[in-house]
Image 1 (cartoon, helix red, strand yellow):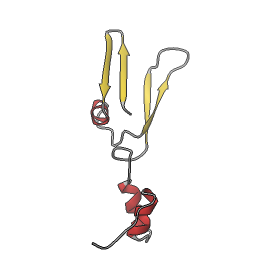
Image 2 (image 1 turned 45 degrees about the vertical axis):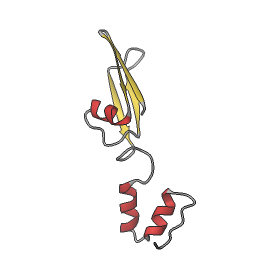
Image 3 (image 1 turned 60 degrees about the vertical axis):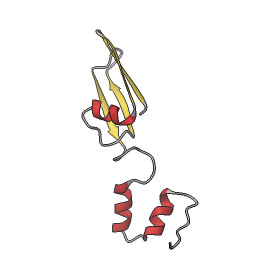
Image 4 (image 1 turned 90 degrees about the horizontal axis):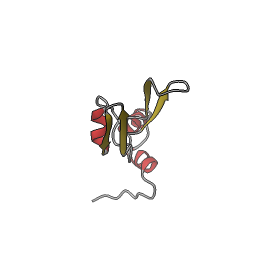
Length: 91
């Protein structure tokens, strides 16, 4: 989500930026979501937010990484799952 415009009988409100949008809708855990309007042949009566995780929706999912670690995957395998072309080296 980058911008949400909410229009009503009293005008319109525009909310921009991922964090502000998440906060405007009651603290969504992620901006990675699908919004479905519920209503038949009329103005929507309600909206359903179906989430895709936690965080900003870009990069490594902490929940997914935790689940992979719990399943026994090594840290290198987990990082390569999220970041293609990464090379791990000792410093």
